[in-house]
Image 1 (cartoon, rainbow, N blue to C red):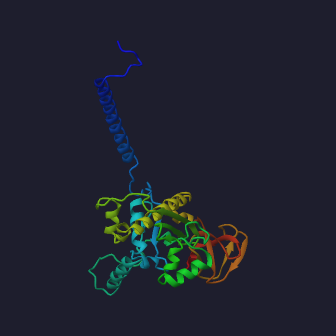
Image 2: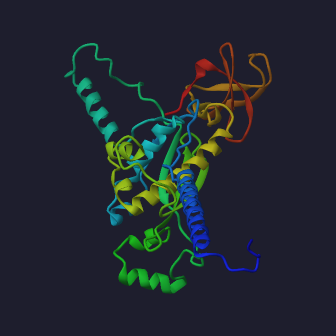
Image 3: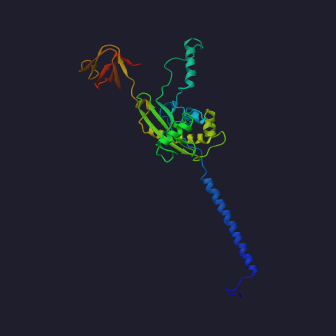
Length: 328
């Protein structure tokens, strides 16, 4: 019988080493499996566009004036935003670009009598846009940590070494670190009130992209915005816009009811001399006399042949509907 202090035989040592190697291999395989699973669980997915169960109004997209995308060899962000909006089902898109130009050509043909009879193209059929959305790049503070150079030095550097117009782009886009800060401005078309201004941020490799045509990359390419998924900077900008759009949708969801009911009513004008009454009755007190062609602002309240409205001084009362018409 061997003592605990006695050396082990070479055979015993071989068995011990073999056992250790076997256990090490098992542990190594287990670690590799766990690592693979961790990578699988942490795999980056495509950007997630918010989806609505009902529309929040109609939307037209307007290009910003600075055309910053030209300097980056990208397509207009209008095409990019159209895909994002369409995928979200949050707004009905109305075309105010080339689609509108083509539609106007059809209307001109109809007006000239060149289209077939009963083509049903005429005035009063176009759907109004409740909102105008402008996609742009955000301006950065010169002291921002993401800005490579600051203050007057940055201005001098950009004016000397950066192509004309690209300096303003670099204020919101870092080509070196592949980061982007963008802005979406949403304006009420009736009241011209800015109802939302949201910024979005993204950096390189925040998310993954489908290389095929089944995902968002394919949708952007089909809509003429393929440059945003074919280049690193384009992908970063796309992610930033989706970030800003997600915030913007949350803002609009806070508004009560449909956009058209939230917005200011269209003004009216008087067709003849008349009176503004305290109640919808010719025998009620007269609030003020009305001149022909005078502007009034309806409250939306109506009763029989009367409409409630206010003047430019805030005087409110009732006017006979036959005396007013929508202002052009």
